[in-house]
Image (tube, rainbow over all chains, first blue to last red; front, side, top):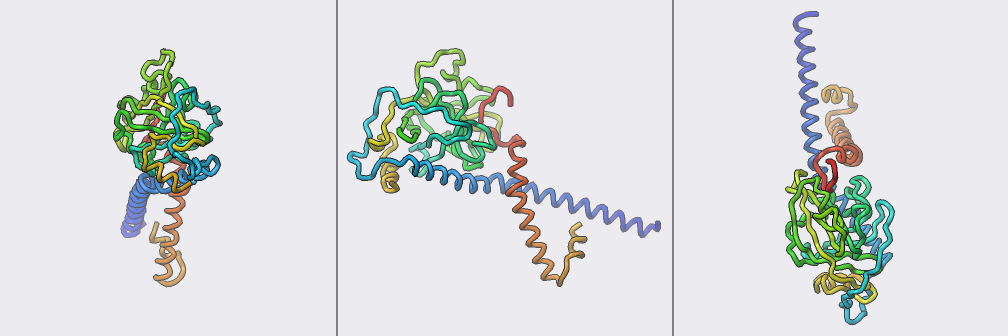
Length: 250
Length: 54
């Protein structure tokens, strides 16, 4: 092989390696675009469709109902049967997160089955809405529709309203914590006390923290306050803006 | 690599640019619809549950 021929082969190899490196760089950039932007676009469309289907199957109160505010009931709330994996059984509405905030809650915390597609996931084996124990939920803090993006804005006393096919379950935020990813005690029946016997109905939201990392978990605890029948109207805890919006849609 | 592709596409330069554009779009679509969704759950970027072992 002549010296010239060898040189041209060497240039060819260097050229292909260079093109492969550029291609890898473009693919990595594309992955970031997909993760940070496209997953939100896709997931938000899916969430909206699930919410619309859920509302269609279990309509909100008729608009002519008067008064619109359903009485808050203190008796035992209606029990929801434990749903099958990835089945949507409720919606979460949080006045602090805006009047248009509504994300479906489905059984399970698998990423491919629930969290990456259907919004909020319910830790299997934890209490159902309104039950004594801990109604524990997980959701993305960023990407995939980011249902818990605004978790740090929640203040003690803020309402977390869970809407099932028949009832509204109102919880009030009690505290927010930042914990290690292995802190499973936050979803124990009595949060923080894995061995204790529960006497109260609690709610817990878990999501990742700090934003765009997975080093820690951001945790919000809340305590059950009351329930209202959907047929009676809307719970006062939703606030007048959400109620007005829901009435317009009904 | 891309030079080889360019030499093997038929037609004048303008047509080849068009073909490369279509191929590029198809590659991006394949990444967005199949490749990235398939590999993302295996990457450690996005966990929001508390678990015994992570």
